Image (cartoon, rainbow, N blue to C red; front, side, top):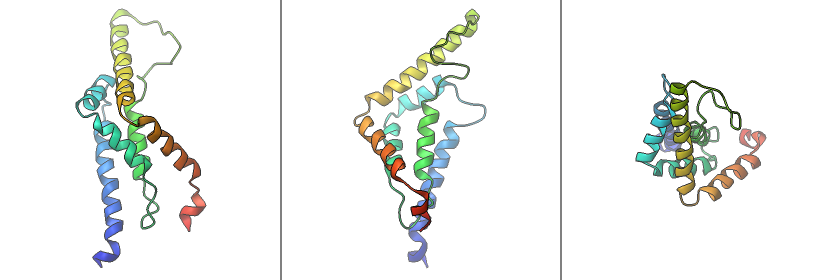
Length: 142
């Protein structure tokens, strides 16, 4: 029995581990951009691992896996812009709010900088994009 379902349980465990990371990053109350930066700065290898996971094609033994999607969502959460910001638009703020907003903006740029410092980040990102672009739902159903 275990040999029949072992691979599937492995796939489910992968998803559960990623949901745990998702729950740590996307919690209530929401983490500030500064807090996310501190998390990523303490272990920047997590960006490499998330990119690697998002690149993995769906296995034949568990085609409905969402591990790649969860990893990509975590990356998107890590790289999100500060709430209330619109790139290219200057929003008039009071001094205290402006200082806080500037700190959040700087933290977001710093997280992006950490990603850009990772080796092979661009080829990995392109490989993820190409894999998702080629993927067809009808093929997964078969």
